[in-house]
Length: 298
Image 1: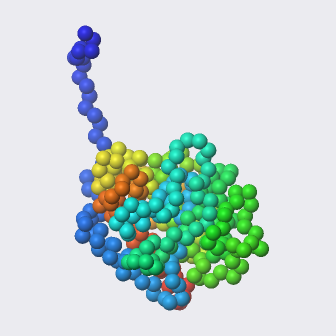
Image 2: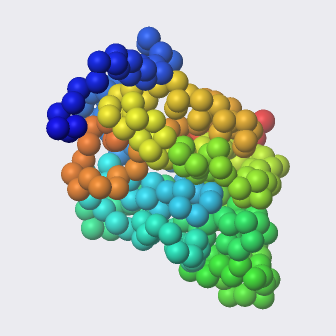
């Protein structure tokens, strides 16, 4: 009965998962910390009446989790499952961007007609030969493109389009650029897509716009983190992925935020919320600093 045979060979013990002894980026995983960060966002007010909303632009390859990140932030702020930004979770088939329109996503605050003083700008994803055109993203950064524009991979927006703003002011511009890359696919990212992302970053740099990177799908990149999200900053694999992300895009490590978007969950999770809030807190502060610098230069 071969099925009952037990080999006399010694089975080597499983190799320990690569992990640091202590977190290299300390995080307070507590409900109190979550409530404190939520309160700071809820009480946040822009320091100038000239700007009513901070504009945050998300860009990156298709399937990186841009729309899912918007939904995840909204889920954290609302304390419930949300799907304001339509996202596509289909695997296989044609790899085309699910988002095709330029749209501002407002986030509801206290009640009807009340919104947070920051909005996300969701755009078509970057692809090797299709996707959103770099010139269009540059126009978005400068505030030339209006809400509702449908991106055309075959050509950039025309200046006579009703969606083209020929005289944008500070309120129309992007106030923080957020690059989004999936942790589990950084190593196989297309060189052409990375080149496009770096070109967008260079334009943002020339405009003085602050930049951060959201690294999504951390649970798919590291079994340790998939089992326990609190291990995210003791995981050697996640730090390796962040370093790779920093090297590819040229973003400093302290401007890279690994997160897990809401995907299967329908109720809030403390660990997901804390990581998302840590990123959002800095994004809002960076954007506000930029606006202040434009209004009150030295």
